[in-house]
Image (tube, rainbow, N blue to C red):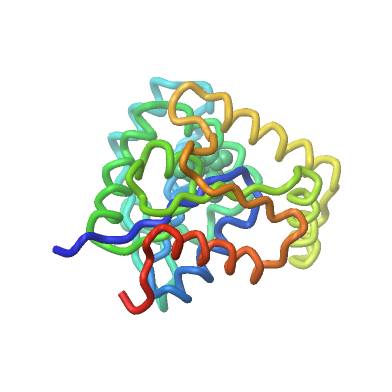
Length: 228
Ligand code: DC
């Protein structure tokens, strides 16, 4: 099998990773792998079971009962939890908070690591998450650390919710983002941090197409040829 080309994108919540990665994958003809969705599906399982986010033993037990798989419909990733497509159920604030809390546990991370590596071994992927460049795909040809100021990220989330007609408060969103960043960056296993060989992109003052151009440029500088 010819070697695959992997692009790893890491960064904090709301930096625009998934929006950008999806579009870049379409542009390059790569598969987009949203690892956050896999963690979210595991969190949904724990919430449904009524497991407390501090109950490590129960979460480890739950890991044994869970199978996560991915499917693609019209190029869009669907995440399956024990065969059920839960893609439409994992974007709530409740699931976000639970996800960040359970993703500190080794059993949870180990469960998803092999699946993520296998995808990247067999396909050209753009994979986004928190530990992709540092831990999941240390040999990814291109690594990007995508960030933006906390205020800009909160504003983007606020606008998204307002457009959906949901009631929300900008200060609360900003506080939630800060808490999630703190937890993701300070956990013991595979914390969020910029890989030494990652290209840093701060999207605070950039449009989506500018970020996509910057990433395409970074990939070309790291050996990506068109028409793979
Ligand atoms: O990217 P996201 O917002 O959907 O991720 C939700 C949570 O999942 C995030 O707060 C931390 C966790 N996560 C992780 O620990 N490692 C990853 N590779 C992806 C997500």
